[in-house]
Amino acid sequence: MKKVPALLLLELFTVYHALGLSHEGSGAIMYPNSDNEVVHEETHYTPELDYKYPHWCRTLKLHNGHMTCSSPRGGNYRNSLGTRCALSCERGYKLLGQSSVQCMSSRRWSGTAYCRVVRCHVLSHIQHGAYSCSRSFLVHSRCDYSCFQGYQIEGDRYRVCQAGGSWSGAEPTCADHDPPKLKCPLSRVKVAEPGKLTATVSWERPTATDTADISMQILRNGPESGSEFSEGQYVIRYKVYDQARNMATCKFTVHVEVRRCPVLKAPLHGYLSCSSDGNNYGAVCEYHCDAGYERSGTSTRVCLFNRSWSDQAPECMLMQIKTDMRSAGALLDQFYEKRRLLIVSTPSATDQYYKLQNIMLQRAGCGLDLRHVTVIELIGIPPHEVGRIKEQFLDTEVIEGLRQALQITRSYFNMVLLDELGIDRERFINPTTSDELYNFIEEYLLTEEEQERLQLNKDLCD
Image (tube, rainbow, N blue to C red):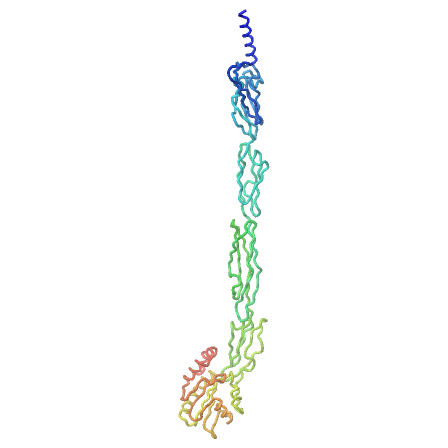
């Protein structure tokens, strides 16, 4: 009776052991989770080793991967005790975890692993450009680069996220190869202003545009707008650089023309004095006659825009002094703005001062003519008074009119010097040498032009 329970217990233990229902020790069964991981499920029994039991460990799964397993039993046993599996991922996926696991006696696999899709690092932005990707930064994604307007791509136009997690090619750059656009004003011709040899020329400052840059500095080579240009042709150049040092240039010409009339000839027995350059547009030429000659016709001529002179050329005619006038005013009018007058008065032709002065005046005749001076003599006391210009005699009424108008006394020797406007400029009560007369006339009465003319003709009287 005592053997029956013992045999019964032994048989029950054998059945439980065969079915793996023992509760001694602890173990683990592997289940795949939602991330394809091989996880452990803790148990609280230690099964007896059985290499022939085909489903010792749970079936191993690896999404997007491959398993190469070898079992002690051979064949297609993939989860029997002692089975070893080599794990790998499909192209484009990366294995995270152990690359090899084994079915353990604890009914667990020796490790976990799963396949994660490969990702490349985030691409950095390129200056003056952008990129767009087909699948973000996942494996096999293609990112195409483009440049902003005005820039051109240099390098790889696209990059692909490779299976190894790196990008193909190299990062490109956006380079500015397009030069800016610069437009100059039109070339121009300008006529010099009247009476001048220059012209003021102005133009609008060129404007520059560029597809890449907003503001650029424009450089000029040549005079600036609003400058005074002398006669000739000028090339004005402009250039501009963008930030990439691409350059654009433009140019235009400024032609300044001085319109000229034919060169005037000096009149016979006279000379010309002209303003500006003598025969340019707006120049004024004044006609002058030599001593003893008077101008017949207009005094000035102007060079016109059509390159011709105004009016007709005057002539220098031998001066005809009329002494048969009835008044002093009529006599003086002949000399107005033409000649200066030196009026000599003496109470008698035998006056010693007069005799000495008369000798000096005869020697100074040529010099006085060069200085446009005519001598009038008033000699004696009425009723024997005489007035004369060289060999021509004056009427008594004219003599009296001159004395009253100019307050010339008969009591003693004296001289009165009048300018070309008939204004009393100097009086002398003593004989005066020709040099003293010349010096006074040159210093106070002659114009600059007359002085220049005098210097040219001084030798005529030597």
